[in-house]
Length: 527
Image 1: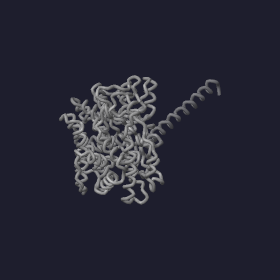
Image 2: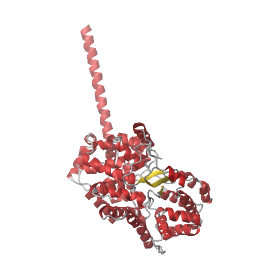
Image 3: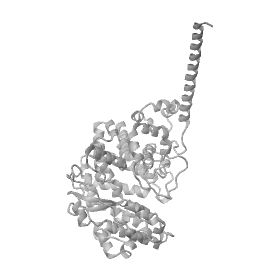
Image 4: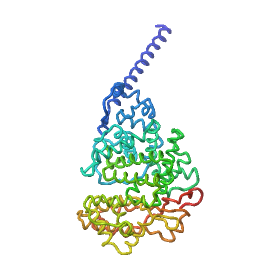
């Protein structure tokens, strides 16, 4: 065989091998596409939506084309509501990589005894590892789809027992809220951006990165305020994808969130001064409605790190609490209701619910001791006469007079520059842990556990003169994060000796709220 024939033979062989490689690559890619198209995790079942020609067309096309389009595009053509959960979640993962990376590092409070569903969590399915805040955030996105698709069964899922499951009419109220609130593609996209960015301040690295960029330490303020200042410095790229109007709405909502937490008001965890941010919403009702929808979805996903199959936390009592918050906000924004009068709606309605549940004691909100007890009913998430009696007995009979005085004074402070109130952040979760960690679960043991918590809370509500002097001028509410006592409350020793809590020191001070018009974090004025 001559040189030309050798070269021709080599060329033919190379061509044959190259063609075979391309063929194998195409087969492999096709198999991957088929697998990803047909794969639907059991923990991500399809939502129930009505059949339509468009639905059948989407199903017939497969997912290959859909994955090549953007999140905004599938919202615009309506397929956002129709695609399998997994496909939508993959698109969100691609759309917000930096934000979701931060959520991996976010801090959270997990119940150590909570059972988990079978199969992979959302985060495990997307990242191969479990990330609680990823699960919580993305369950909120799924909850938005369940509401839109009128999928009540998916939404309530494993909620229980039956008396506390979200009622159909409450679900309908939520659907109506979102139906009126989401008027366009931009509205829906903006809401998803709000959901994905809402808890970024829980990533300790965000405050660290802010300090490197600006030279100001904001690590001691609440996570909502950390987010607000990070957004001001352009450190949250997702917001750059919004229209100017949508970004303005979101910025107003983030500013509101840095001063006012919906969930904290629902449980009377904050103080009336914490509601001052609602005053800035007057004339900006669209921004408020967007923020409230985001908070509803945040709550819907709040148990997503433990159960990612439904809106586990949006049970009927909590829904009613948030509807109360909605009414309070509307009263302050639209009817110019004073802050304390709006705040007391929460306390009055909690007592009314307890009366409906069989609690017989009458309390007068004008009396400081009664009002303090009404706040404790909210903080303790009491829902029946037995639980209310536990708190009543602990408050009136099982704590020293000095502790009762501390509680009565501290729980009645509105919060001002002259006398800041204390917000004991996460105290509702700590009370739940204390009640759940007794030796036998008896009524007497629960009273002892609550009494120990009230003694700790009483100390938390006192602001010593030296602490007050260290505060920058303008602070109206001090935050004290009580999660440091979790190891004590979960210990075996606490079951038989809840008084061990008396040895725990109170948390350090953080800034929760400042007087309107006061700017603290620019310069050296910070704790």
